[in-house]
Image 1: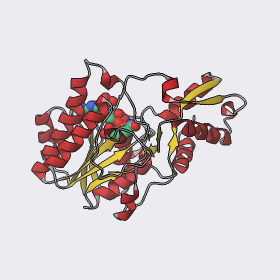
Image 2: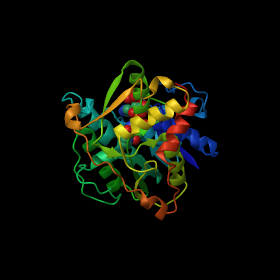
Image 3: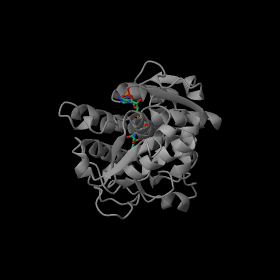
Image 4: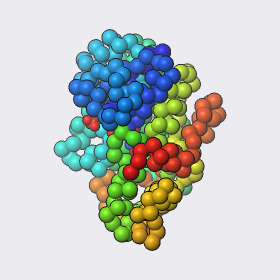
Length: 313
Ligand SMILES: NC(=O)c1ccc[n+]([C@@H]2O[C@H](COP(=O)([O-])OP(=O)(O)OC[C@H]3O[C@@H](n4cnc5c(N)ncnc54)[C@H](OP(=O)(O)O)[C@@H]3O)[C@@H](O)[C@H]2O)c1
């Protein structure tokens, strides 16, 4: 199987290429930069075939995809800076990447009859209530520009293709890029007290684990909408932070112990306004994965442990 992956300079694309190579699939990675620009960790992605591609350039997309002729495209590239996306002068660009770019990829898939895997987000929902969102729920009501554009990307994929997976994920962390864990470990070193939101509820997604699932999907034809985060239960950002520091202390980093560092739970309102509104209820129902024969991801606690062990801090 030959797989084309967009966004390999980001968190998820990096791990997807590594998983594809591990399985012996031919793959080509792409991103905006002239050459692979992620971390130099010596993994397969750093030397795998790579092509520079701006997904907003429709002609370049169709040329590169037709030349590459993949069986599957795993589309990880996106504008992901949620607050910046709210700026008046950025909205057109965010839309061009998340909607126009996705549409270009979907059209190219249609032309060569390739499967497409599109990564989306819990932000397509309004975050009301406490019931986990089911993957086939159509009650879309994004609260911010990023969510709206990711939803319109979904609609482009579903209207142009039949052989597609739309996989919604949330609270992503991976080795290649900035993430919440790195931020907390950094600010935990320089602050005695941290205030962390405890009324936004969801589950983290470790890109290393998600990459395994996406490759399983690429090898299958069980198309449709899916939700995929790690298992281990729904938590708040506050709960996540407490567990990050608990595991860090367990690994010998006593600078994060409770007698040195206090973590205070605060509401979103107490924390103060961010530019983009965020959903309170980001619980994603993942039961469709097992129902369709896919293995659920490991627990987020286990994922966090492996991440902290692998990437010393
Ligand atoms: N991160 C999360 O918490 C989260 C949550 C839910 C869903 N998702 C979705 O999951 C997917 C993967 O996310 P991620 O965290 O791996 O994203 P990421 O780390 O931000 O990587 C995205 C990559 O896409 C590239 N890109 C941006 N514009 C492009 C363009 N015009 N042409 C080609 N490449 C372009 C970016 O390059 P530059 O860095 O140079 O712009 C970056 O390397 C995305 O679809 C995202 O929407 C992410």
